[in-house]
Length: 289
Image 1 (tube, rainbow, N blue to C red):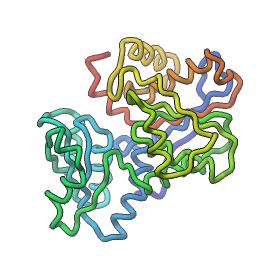
Image 2 (spheres, helix red, strand yellow):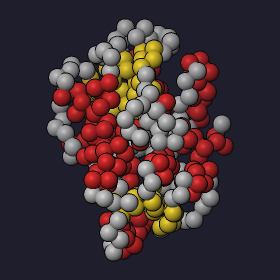
Image 3 (cartoon, one colour):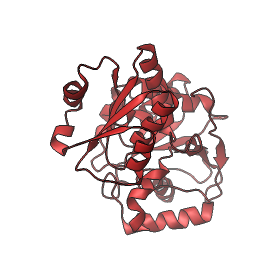
Image 4 (spheres, rainbow, N blue to C red):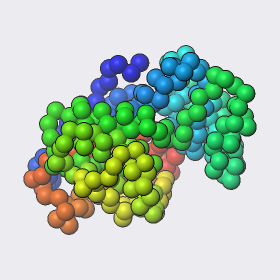
């Protein structure tokens, strides 16, 4: 399942940029999408090595991670269960999870905070159960994400990526350091108060001068948006033909354009944007369009 992927680098025609490229991780798989595929790659290999057959994970009602884990489990012949944050609901994302055979357990937000306790309470006596943190956050996930750098056909002045937990960012930084590149890594936290991302990255790899955090492009916080961002998505997608989502990738591309206007990056610099997929998450904001 994890042997071959399709994730080309494509040039994006967008003024005033002359060398703007996109790493199309959104094309890897329609359901195990983008960085979710990369995070799960070594997590599932660890589960298989430990002879575990039941994946237990966590997420919100519109979590791409839940869909990805459910799809990956079904393809590997594994069981999957998810603790879903909040009151019981029905939506398109959870429908997909159920179709892939995932069992859903809805948990109040206070209890959800202690994920290890939930795992032990519900599955402590299940010797086949394998814990997967929210979003797939783990050392294994950073190893999978570091492979993005290994796949690149050339070097870039700047690499941009949106961040929720910081796991993908840590993997990218690790990959840049491993190859001794001069590339600047620009991380766009999608949560309000995203400075904690720096600490999360440091959990997995040493910080370095390559890393640049830009904290002002959250548009209100995680899974929050504004009319300005929605209008940006409409114009960007119509102009480029590239579909982006309001939770992650739209905030990243908005930052690239804004930072160029500020002179932080040049229009002739070689720039790579990581399209981390997760487009199904747009279903949670369909009323905004």
